[in-house]
Amino acid sequence: MPVNIIAPYLLTALLRGPRRLVYLSSGSHFGGRPLLDGIDWRGRSAGSYADSKLFVTTLATAVARLRPDVLSNAVDPGWVPTKMGGPNAPDDLELGHRTQEWLASGDDPEALTTGGYWYHRERQEPHRAVHDEAFQDRLLRALAQETGTAL
Image 1 (cartoon, rainbow, N blue to C red):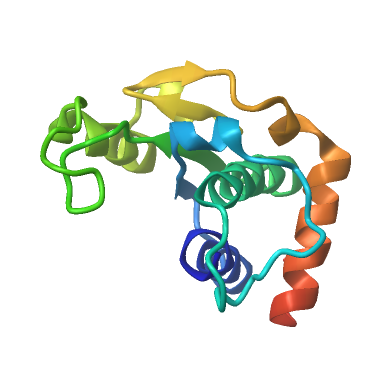
Image 2 (cartoon, rainbow, N blue to C red):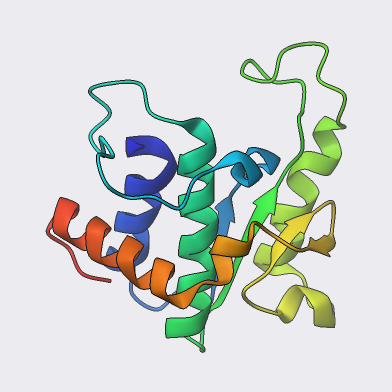
């Protein structure tokens, strides 16, 4: 939780004036639960990777809603051969980062959209909780309370 959601939340809350934000999600977010009770935000115990990725994907969509002047998107780089993904991961390492670069600096009309969940430069439909504004608001309140920093 500290790396996958607390850090992105704090950076978002503390950075002034970014034109684009790209959050690192995962296809694992589909296995996440939109429940906030009992979350160990400080990481003293092992948390759910899937939950943390659901939360950061939701954060990206909430920022898109609340800051319409900022392009905010989440990217699933795929299961790529990294230290975490392992040498037998089936996705292409190159494709894993190209969507992030494209959303951060591209001028294509699609790259200039907001509130998306992307996989290999294709917009996908995320977990249904990601678009639930009540869940977005509960998540933002929990993160603000945990960090002492409001978005």
